[in-house]
Length: 484
Image (cartoon, rainbow, N blue to C red; front, side, top):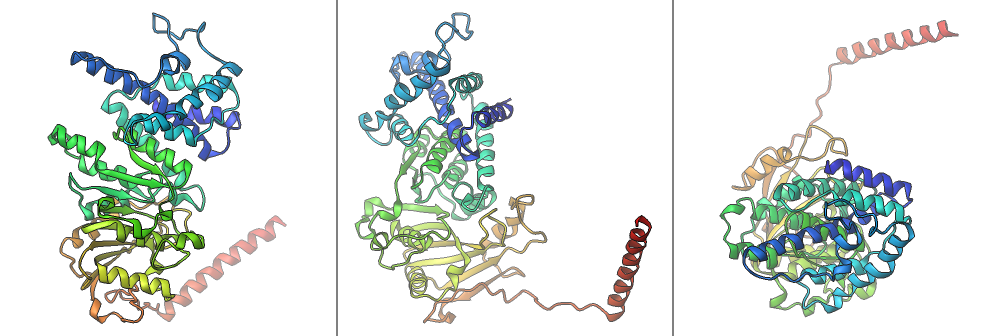
C-alpha cells in the first residue's frame, strides 16, 4: 500500500509540473515529515498519559495536521466543512504554515531538539506544488499512512531508501544522494563501531553511512538498555551537508530509520579552518564518501595546510584532523589518489602514512557508482601511529557492474573474511611502507598475484570461427537478394 501511495503522489506532482524527479522526493518529504511529526506527538501524548504525565504539543493547535491538513468529524471521516482546498490551502501553506515552522530555528532551546530540526528543514524548503487541489489530493493520500508501529517505520524506511537509490542513478551527481548500501554495510562492518563511539560524516548527503551505522548498532535492539538507546539517539551520529536537497532527505532518511532528532547540520564543512579544530570537536569514527571531482575556491583552500582545489582531498585532510587519537575511518575516494604525482597529492599521502595506520585499501571496479564514471578505493585507517604495512584487496567480479547489475553483499564477502587476518590470496596482498618510494609515496594498486597473461587460441580454432562467420554472412546476403 505504501509503495502504491508513493507512486500516486509522484503522478500528482508530475501532472502539477512540480519540477523533476528530485523535486518529487523533496516535496513528498516535507509532507511526510509533518505527518510523521503528528504521529510522533500522538505517541508521546499516549505514553505521557500512561505514565500519569502531561504532554505539551510542539505545534500550536491551528498548525497541527489534524487542524489544517485533514480535519476529521467525530466519526473519523474527513470534515469537508473545515477542510482547506484550492487557493485557500496553497495560501495557508505558503503564507502561514511555512513561516510559522521556520521560526522554530530561532526559538528552539538547542540544535539537538525536534523543534530545531523543524525550523531548519522549513528554512531550506519552499512549497513547489502550484495547485491547491493537487496538494489536497496528496494530503489525503498521506493521511492514510502511518508511522506509529515499528513495522510501519521499517516498511517506510525501505521505500524511502529505494527512492534515494533512484536519485543516485539519475545523473552525474548521483553519488551525493546514494552510495551503494552493500558497500556502506561492508565499510561499517570493517570499522566495527561500538555503542559509546561518536560517528561522523562531514559530507553526509542522504545520510546513508549514519543510517547504516545506526542499523549496525541496533541489530540487537532488544538487548540495549534505556541508557544505551538514549546515547544512540542523541550522542552518537553526527553529520554535515552543504546542499539543501540531500540535507533534507538525509534528515528524513534518519527519522524513518528510527533516529528521532538527527544531528545533521546544514553547512559547508570545508569553510571550517583546520587550525580551529579542538579536542572537544573530534570524533571516534569517520565514515564518508566525499564528493568526487569538486573544485573549491582559493579562500576555502586557505583553511588547509595542503592547498588543493580537489574537494575530496580537502575532505580527507579534514577527516584526519577531526579524528581522535586511536580513532578509526572508512573513506571512499577516487583511486587516482593513490598514485597521482602533483605536490598536493604526494603531500597528502605522506600525511596519511605518517599520522595514521592505513591498514587496508579496498580497490573497487568501475560501475560501483552508477552515473559517476570513476573508479574508487576505500581507505581504512586508524589515527595515531604511522603506517608500516598496507593490505590491499582488489575486487574482481565476473560481471560488469551497472544499474541493472549493482554491487551486492555477496560480492564483498571474501573481502570481509580475508580482511580479518589480512591474508594473501589471488585478490589480496600486502606491501611494506619502507619499500614505497619515499619521494612520491606511490600506493598504486598493482596486484602481484594476478595473472595478466592472455591465453591465445589455436590457429585452427580461429580459422573455423572465420569459416562459420562467412557462412552466416552468405545466408544474410541470400535473404536480402530474395527480398529485393
